[in-house]
Amino acid sequence: MSKQAITTAQAPAAIGPYSQAIRSGNWVFVSGQIPLDPATGRLVEGDAALQTERVLRNLAAILEAAGSSLARVVKTTVYLKDLGEFARMNEVYARFFPDCPPARATVEVARLPRDVSVEIELVAEVEG
Image (cartoon, rainbow, N blue to C red):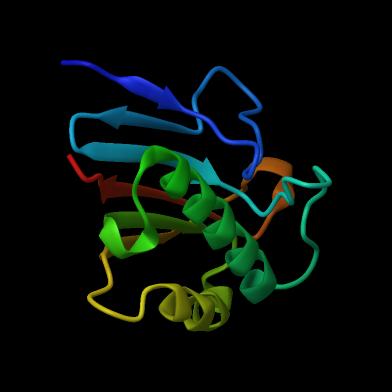
């Protein structure tokens, strides 16, 4: 099995001992992303809708660097600080996955890095 670390300046740099993503064969496994603006390094303030949009843009940039796209995502996991924000997150999420949305789990968690409202990780297919 071979694996390749994927990195891009178009998404926030890893803030610990992990990769933005790992490509293995025809799959890419993207680490959880939070709403950090890669240009400024600052958190996107606001509700779960605003934060979800930034997170999905970060994920899209990493997928592009890996040779994939949001259209090739097969599974996501969404971590929400408050499931009361589910509808706001879901409205934005649906815009990014208009056709054949991926399988998904959404869970409420006690706390996320930097006290953000949302973090999303995913698995996608890569063209061979």
